[in-house]
Image (cartoon, rainbow, N blue to C red; front, side, top):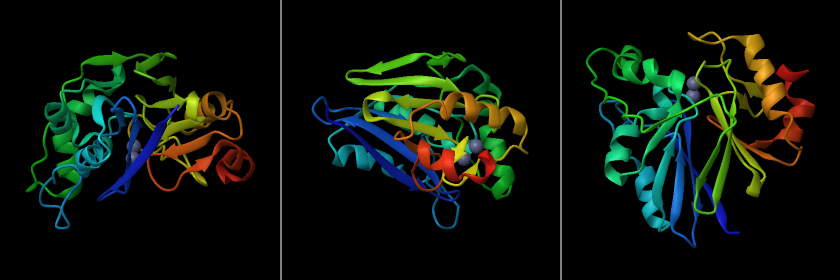
Length: 223
Ligand SMILES: [Zn+2]
Ligand SMILES: [Zn+2]
C-alpha cells in the first residue's frame, strides 16, 4: 500500500486542505478545497493544491467537503472545473454552499467578490458510507455540532481520520455559529471519533495533526 497524505495550510483562516494520494495509480482525493486569498485578501489565488498535486503526479479525481463553511470550500468550483473531479458534500450543505459568496464577503467587506461554490455531484447522507477511489477507501462518519452538515472521513488503511472542524489538537470546533450545538459536538466526538483506536492519526481542519489517544487523554474539552 502506498497511500500518502499531504496537506496545505490555506489563508486567511489557516484551513487545512488534504490530498490523499495513491502514487502508483496517480489518483488522489482532495478533502476541503479551501481558497487561497492574496495577502491583501483582494482575490482568490489559483489554488496551490493543484500545483501540489501536479508536482506529486497525482490526479485529483474526487473532491470532498467535511462541511460547507466557506473557508473549506472556497476553491471548490475552480478545482472541480479544472480537474473534472466530482464534488461530494453532506446533503445539509446545500444552503451553505449557496450562501458562500455572501458569507465570505461579510467577513471581508462587501467590496470583495467571492466565487460561487461548486455544483454538488453527489450528496452524502449521515451514513456511514464507503467512498472508494481505486485503492483509497474512506468511511464517512456524521459528526455534527460545529455545523449540521459535518462529516469526518476515516482512512482505515492508514489508520487516520480527517476530522474537519469537530476535533482539533487540544481543542474542539466552535459551536456558536448557526447550526452549532455543543452537546451534539461532544457526542459526535465521543461516539464517532473516540471509538477509533488510540493510534489513529487525526488530521483536523485547522492546526496540527494529533492522535485519537493523545486527545482522549489530554484534550481539556473531553474530560
Ligand atoms: Zn467550520
Ligand atoms: Zn474551518
